[in-house]
Image 1 (cartoon, rainbow, N blue to C red):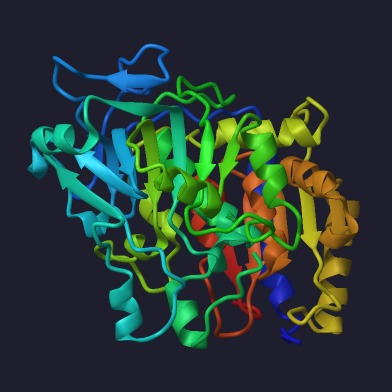
Image 2: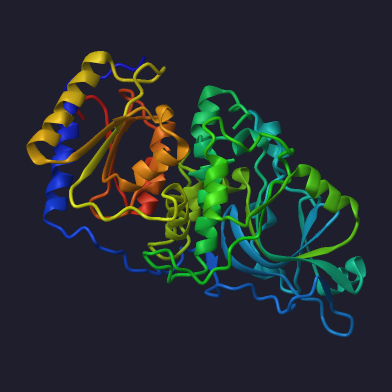
Length: 448
């Protein structure tokens, strides 16, 4: 068990009171205004929300007497890219362009996608080859593809992650850092699609619409499919907690799934495909980004792209409405405090610290009239977990998967997450998404 001294309760109460005071003196119905900031030096973004393809509604694109449609890059930061008119043949992505300088090096856009392991040789294996992606001219493309290609309509999300990262609720939706991976000298188990991957894919895609509203309205078309070329069909992308499929099916209800077998079938036809728009990521590619901290999350690199402060709201509101039977929670008239208890788990407070914290929180409830929820997430249904998080103003918990629920909180100046970590230990798993969503974050060690 992780033992934390009772003194840490003092720190937690100070944070709670400061947030509550702000709450009591501020109208809750504040909304974030959309913002668009200039992209960092190594980023690129287009302001067009709709695919640039002019193929009308055809299932096949022909060029015959005109030039083959060229590939363009609408948004990019290392490991996260949005392409228009990206081609695929024999399982390899083909960028068709007569302006090679318009694209970053291929190794900053894609990786081989092998299972991650330690050592220089294993790192070298992740370098992309022509089997992964190539850049060719329009003349070369016409020779290779002929005069037409089958069209994959709409928006395709593609992750080149191996299965070892695909099936974890946090790593798929909101992830183990490279620092943790190398520190433990072992690959994470492959039983778990990570929120981290989906979080980054949507953040990259949302950069195309800097005017997403606080209610989640956006000009972006709903993605059509999620392609996982290295993930076999089965349970590899489904997390043990059973939340990945809810997030995807509620967040993007029409999303279709393509697995390794589907990708191999497309490749085996030996025919070219033109994909209207592709949002592409690969974990090992992201870690080639400049100035990326060893313990940083891959989604933090996607956050370098410009975009609306409300970028997550289309997904957040869809998921919360799904959990609420078509409704969003009414605005809170008082702070809602949720303490996620991990007592009885391998990483938990010592009993005295837990009891002391619970007593202090109940005193706040009695004295100030706050709403208090002390919960064990596993004892709630999946939809109850999401709904509770959506109503929560201040979330408290020991480092663990339950804190991933912060993704469903309503961002505001007083929304707060308090994470209790093992003394002298810290991982930025929850600090990064909280920061990217505009939620205050406090990490606590004992009384610090």
